[in-house]
Image (cartoon, rainbow, N blue to C red; front, side, top):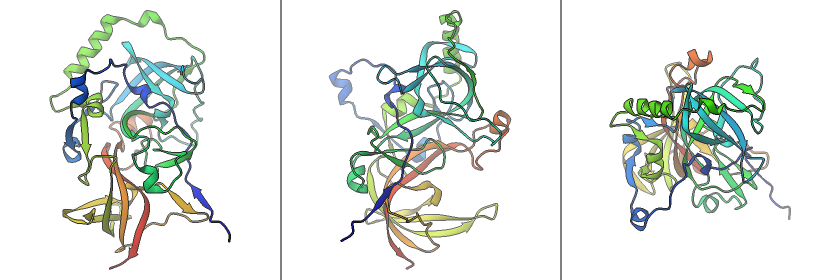
Amino acid sequence: MPTASFCVLMCVTVSLVDADRPTRTPASGSQRSNKRIDIHFDDLVKRRVIGRLGKPMGEYSGIRGVWKASAFSSRTMLFHITHIDGRPLAKEIVYPRAHFYKSGGLPIVPAVPEPEDSDVWELRVVEHSVYYGTPKRFHEESGIPRGVAIIPRGVGVLPHESRPGAIIVPFELTSQITYPLRPQITKGGRVSRRMKSPKASRYVALKLEANQSKNDIRFEDLRDRYRIIGRLGKPLGEYCTIRGRWKARRDIKRFVRIFLHITHIDGRPVKKTIIYRWSDIRFTGILPLGHTLQEPKDSEVNELRVVETVLHNGSPKRSLEESHIRGMGFPFKLRSVLIYHRRFGRSAR
């Protein structure tokens, strides 16, 4: 009997997730027992998230820093940010290479080379938040072998994908950087220590603090102190079964878009229909060899086993002025995204 052949969607990058974490002291017994504060997605989207760079997510910053090889692996590069908007920092902010993405760009713009140890980069960037890593029960739910990890491909609209042999990192909220234009690169350079002024750094910190409102929430607090409850009513990263009908409609530009109108979650009817765009429902799993993922049809009814995640996505303010490139067509904001592995019940009842 011939054996069945399968293909797994591939990804190309993985690195250290914990590189965007500050060094922490061990928590006491009482601190470890503290429960996270629940915050619903609908409430979170009304608040500004202040990123690690000290600005609201989606605002441009000018950064300068140096690439250094990780102490764990010379192949893993870390970007040590030393200056923000021309002002030096008292403590470097570190990002792994896997959390640095080129966004947009024109064909005539030369490709950005892979960074090397001691390279100094100066560039304009936007900070996003995105869940990165492999959800619990991913392998049991998807049927993908345990040697394969799931990794979101940055903050764009591309689907989550998987990579054989990747390091399996936990499903966790991370801060990521995108840059629209080629950075200014100094090969083998060194950041001048004379520019590191603690007095100037304190001034920057005070200024950033003054620009925040009581309704703002810091990225570090959102990651470490809060548990986000998604649109489906479950904590992010937990699986559930949804049922709904696909409906097509034209947008303001007369393009036909298809949406899933969710009517049931885990077999129970919802009080109010929850609507997702097809582009926000992303496949990660196994397809029979030679098969492609098909877009659902209007009036089709499906059941899907999904896990909900969130990310900041869209066109940042001043995108056209900063990059001379038109944006993605929708504003920068926090979005809910569903990941699924199989679609059941192709019917039109």
